[in-house]
Amino acid sequence: MDSKNPIIKIVNLTKRFGTVVALEDINFEIEEGKITAILGPSGSGKSVLVKLILGLMRPTKGEIIYKGKNIFSLSEEELYEVRKDFSMLLQDGALFDSMTVEENLVFPLKIRKAKKEEIKDKVDFYLRSVGLEGFERRYPSQLSGGQRRRVALARALITEPQIIILDEPTTGLDPITTESIENLILSIKEKNKEKTFILITHDPFSAFKLADNIAVLFFGKLIYYGSKDEVVERMNSDKTIFHIFKRANLKIAQTST
Ligand SMILES: Nc1ncnc2c1ncn2[C@@H]1O[C@H](COP(=O)(O)OP(=O)(O)O)[C@@H](O)[C@H]1O
Ligand SMILES: [Mg+2]
Image (cartoon, rainbow, N blue to C red; front, side, top):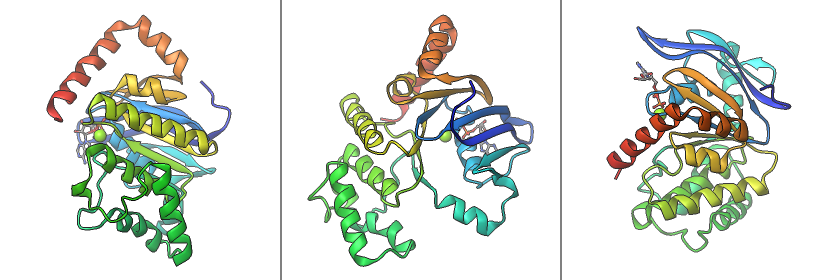
């Protein structure tokens, strides 16, 4: 599938660690203003791909083109600027436990030397947009798992990045909380049509629910890439793959609780 409006192009990307092939000759484009899921069972190379996109790791071969430039040919200063366009919601939320909700949100703004007034407005706005007004003074230990993800989501949004990477945003949550976080992501996307989301997930149901486009990684290989409808159709005609995903899912669900 050729995307209409690619913001990131992944070209012949290969990453090996010794004899381990984490990614093998990957080619696809991430469309601007869409949610692209990178779907694959554990060990498929999803995290390695994200590290490469952020320029935190060098590939064995290949390029990642962002705004017309290869990430791997940028200087450290240029890379630093590029990373400001990105925000990442880490797998477990990764909040600072010794900081209140408010301090967690203020932190990335202070790094960017935002003004006091702006900080206050943004904290209020983003706490409200994840449904947590009134939670400013709480510590992460005083929040439920779902509330912690909401804070992490607010923290990823507060710097107003162009591209938001969500790494397993619902892993370890119960089904009802999972659904509420997924719905929140969809409503945030609806209000931020120009923003690009990259959803890292091992859960096909989550990818089908949230994504416009899906890249299916299977132990380092890109086995499908296309619009959600195309991928759903191909998965339905290839039950083996879907079955493997379901099994991978069950395993992860059992170990993460
Ligand atoms: N720093 C590393 N050194 C060696 N092998 C690695 C390293 N990082 C990842 N790998 C290997 O690359 C493969 C893909 O890993 P990863 O991207 O973390 O998978 P996923 O995020 O899809 O679970 C795995 O086989 C993993 O063991
Ligand atoms: Mg991973």
